[in-house]
Every structure is written in C-alpha cells, then in structure tokens.
Amino acid sequence: MDEVNPLLLVDDDVGLGDLLSTYLGRFGFSLTVAQTPSEGLELLASGEYKGAIFDVMLPEMDGFELCKIARRKYPRLPIMMLTARGDMTDRVVGLEIGADDYLPKPFEPRELAARLTALLRRAVANTSTGDGEVLYFEGISVHLSARRVWLQGNKEIILTSIEFRVLSELVRRRPAVVHRDVLIEEIRGFERDVFDRSIDIAISRLRAKLHDTPQSPRFVQTVRSEGYAFIAPPASA
Image 1 (tube, rainbow, N blue to C red):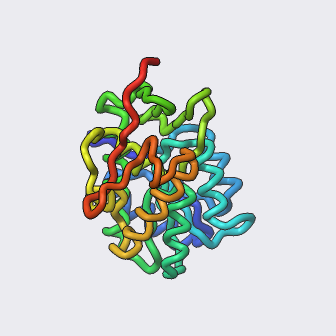
Image 2 (cartoon, rainbow, N blue to C red):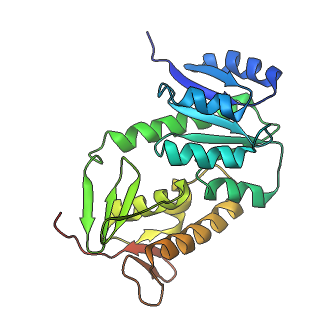
C-alpha cells in the first residue's frame, strides 16, 4: 500500500477544504481541515502532519502571523501559503516569514498537488542525506536537518525558511561559488522576478543576522557576475 502523507489545511472556506481533501487524496495526501488558526495550531501540536497549507485571509489572525508562529515552533515543517492576493509584495513577505512556497488563488488543484509533492520530497531529502550532524565553522555552526544556526558564543539566530535555504545551499557547496540561478532554483515556485528579489532580500537579511558585510565578509562572499560563496573555514566542535 502506498504511503499516505497527512497534511493540515487552515482555511475557513469549507467548500475549498472539501474539494482539496477529495482531490489531494488521489495523490497520496490525507487532508485535515481547520477553519481557524487556533484550531490549526492545536492540531499541529500532535506532530502527525508532514506539511501544512495556510490561507492568508483567516479569522483570529492572518496567515502570515500563523506562519510565523508555526515556523518558530516547527522549523522543519513544510509550509505552503494560499491567498487570493496577487500582489508581489505579499508573495515576498510570505517567503520572508518562513513559508516554503506560495500559491495565489485561484489555482489549479493539480499544481498544488505537484508543489506539495516537491516540498515533501525536499524535506525528506534534507533529513536523509547525512545532514543530521552539526557543521562547525569559524564563528558559526549550522545544523542542516534541524534548520538551526548558532553564531560564536552559542548565540542562536532565527532565520526564515528562505534565508536558511540559501545558507544551507552555500554551506553544502562550499567552497564552490553558487550561481544565482542555482539559488533561484532552490527556492523556486514563483515568477522569476519574485525569485530575483527574494534572493537579494535573503542575502541582505542573512548578512544582517550574521553580522556580515559584503565589504568585509566572514561568511558569505559575493563573486561578481557569478553568485555567492560560503567562505568561513571549518572549525572543531
């Protein structure tokens, strides 16, 4: 029997919940629907869900706030955002606060199924390829599977999902230069112009949180016309 992947949808549109529950079942997903963020957070606490889908327009709090809370509590949980808003700024905000992908309404259910499949496949890959150990470098340590980062002195810093993806890709490929197109592919799911902005925003915010600068980089170095490289040398634990 094929594996069934349990997902949580937080959306107050009952009709959409029923439709997606039936449709996604064809692709190996079992969908539980919560109509409020508080109900959704209570269900997530069970730890049984392999991914979550949040609408932006919700009662109690919007989906962005719900995403921030869920990302803080469950750093490895794949999160998809759904919204009727098509504004580019909203899409960038969704990525910045920790969403893994963003699909504006109206959408084709088949596209949602494909993106969810890709998100869960990526999550499994991150936990099954030797990423369980903490990697130590001068001034920073990175736990790839747990999505946790500490600066020197064991000060943990909190990264959004997109910021961590960029950092982890740079760390995995060190000391090679990672081309911008590779980083764009790593966070794909949106129009290319949104991707480009997201990369710029992610690198800038990542540097700020690492107390790094492009003029005197300790961790992330810009390689003009090519991309970026992680340059911190390895250190012992």
